[in-house]
Length: 220
Image (cartoon, rainbow, N blue to C red; front, side, top):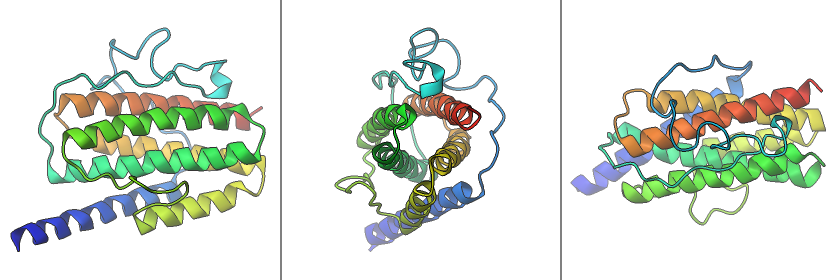
């Protein structure tokens, strides 16, 4: 009975966190301020020339080089932090599936390049979920399909928005990256696990590069 109660509580927490992310997507507007020094931001693997998420083919295209292997030691996660990890996995899948759909519709390199980057981002988050024994909400989900109803509704809304025009698709991408940055910053707050800190820091840097790339395309 205690196990069933705990599972129910964790499931409810995942839905609440994913719902909060969906709400952030709906409200996102304007680029957030750049972060100051913190976990995942100083020199180290993935930063500097040729590092993680440095543009391939020019910053305008939004290309990334991917995330180094998860080599930092594991730590301890609270239930809220475990829930946040699962929510970040759904967000990365949402971004990938959305950009892949737009890449099929519009002849813009930015969607292909950032969709490829989101694949590496999701792989890194999945590695962490395996480490910490967290059920992957994206497992066996077809493109455009999501476990959490709020995330599914958000994806459907953004997909419909982006099919209106090329600029509408770029705006949808901008909305996703702005919300992603907000979610990652919240996820980093109070986090002490070195491996999760490192991955979140890389993801945050990547989303900032992606957001800047969408801004450049919209101002072209």
